[in-house]
Image (cartoon, rainbow, N blue to C red; front, side, top):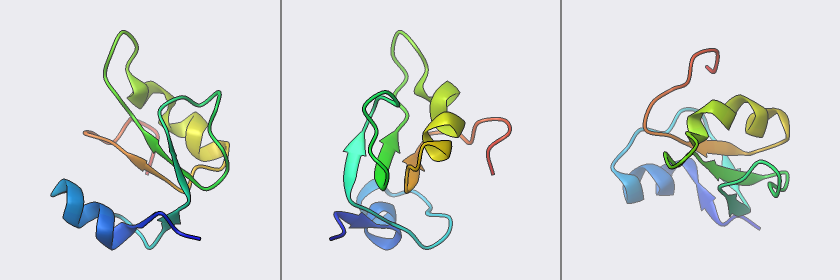
Length: 73
């Protein structure tokens, strides 16, 4: 069951979705990310953008970012 898809995420955030995807959960931490989750890259004490590639490699369905990290397409 889908929690959010690319079209809904773009409409809700005012951003741009790349590709056609759907996610089943949300995570801000690659250590607790489940396959199919949306990884949200927060900028806090550590910049979540530094972990986007790791999240995608771990099975994230998509990543919500404010900038595209180097090495991630």
